[in-house]
Amino acid sequence: MTTDPKTESHTFSLFEPPTGANETLRKHVAPPDWVNPEPEGRYNLVVIGAGSGGLVTAAGAAGLGAKVALIEKHALGGDCLNVGCVPSKALLAAAKRAAAVRDADDFGVLLNDGYKVDFPAVMERMRTLRAGIAPHDSAERFKGLGIDVFLGGGAFKDRETVLVEGRELKFAKAVIATGGRAIVLPIPGLAESGALTNETIFSLTELPRRLAVIGAGPIGCEMAQAFARFGSEVTLFEKECRILPREDDEAAEIVRDSLHRDGVESICEATIERVEHNGGEKRVRFERGGKKHERTFDHILVGVGRTPNVEGLGLEKAGVEFDARAGVKVDATLRTTNPRVFAIGDVSMKYKFTHMAGATARLVIQNALFKGRKKHTALQVPWCTYTQPELAHVGLSRSEALKQYGDAAQTFTQPFKTMDRSILEGHTGGFVKIHAVKGRVVGATIVGENAGDLISEISVAMRAGMGLGALSNVIHPYPTAAEAIQRVGDAYNRTRLTPFLQKIFAKWLRWSRR
Image 1 (cartoon, rainbow, N blue to C red):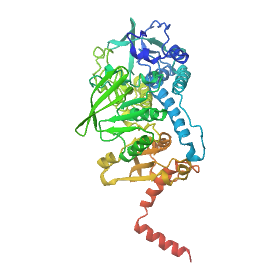
Image 2 (cartoon, rainbow, N blue to C red; image 1 turned 180 degrees about the vertical axis):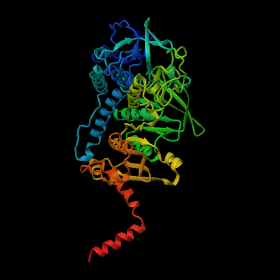
Image 3 (spheres, rainbow, N blue to C red; image 1 turned 90 degrees about the vertical axis):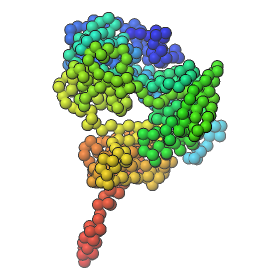
């Protein structure tokens, strides 16, 4: 395993600053005194990469009795634990509390002395919580599950052998689960300016007074809102015409308005031409609307997406086809061009989410070990951007539904501003929007408080084949925001009441009064 900061900036930055919490994290996910085991015979499964997908694969296979080897180059837990979901959601939780205190007087709660965000304390809370979760992903835990854990860079020697730290691991099947990393933009001067990514921003110890965020996708929007709520002056740059360009237009507009209320300035349709730095200041030069502009910042965060980790794996020697941008090529069953080798998660999937890595891990256990034919193309994949309000989606968008089904596609929308719970909580912005074909749900978008939780009800309905009519009959506790889903079902049922049926019902009701 490599932990030298001169050779592995990824691992080094993860454990900065050198606090007790970070030392605890290191002990669990990248223990410097770890001794790799000696391989014994052929493994049923060799897993390269111990992020979310790799950990689920290794634990699941070992639990079924398979002989498993797990290889990790940097730190167990991957991006999710170390530089992704866990630290970012800890920061978002703190930012949400800051906004609640700021807006307390709207609820009659007066804070005469105001409030102050202690940013170092926010960051240390995050690191403490991350370290507390780390034992679940630790090398010792997986060793205890009967898995041979190897720390170091793994690479294929041939079609059935992986080399790691001088040891040869023979396998019947292998799974590539090396994940992805932040995209490096080819903007002159950006790298030299010390731009942050999701891999380095969680090592900050001081709040940037002026923060530029490049990319208004999920990562960019979440961090822009959080740091604005902590007190930074945040400017959000996006080359497209709006933020969250892959999401529903109306939903993205609601999130944009919320970010603006928090003080985030969004500059869309902007092309950043270069970055200059002088001491601690970074000057961003950009073009917008045919005019040249410049802004000065203390830090720049790049959040424009992810690229697969395919380098240094010896994929050519294994007969595994790959593309530097698209990642490892797999079929619907997650098999690569080498029938012994499979790939899951960010390194091979279009949807680069932790839950997608976990879902494909469950499929690959069946397909690799038991000759299953489960297809990842059959999965219903929800996702959520954890701004406030949250924006969640599953299935087809409105435009996709129209393209696929034409006039048969219907869209039903229920605003939260008419829902009692939303009114009482003060979260009236947003809606539930469901797309259906003859009552069958084909997609949905929810923007509002806890949208990421609410979307699961629709995901279950789609998985179970429940239509809007059936959703109308689901009883929800009163008052809850989830009642909005039931009201969408009610709206659909009203469309089924044709003029002919109305006449029949009217005749029946007149007769029943006799």
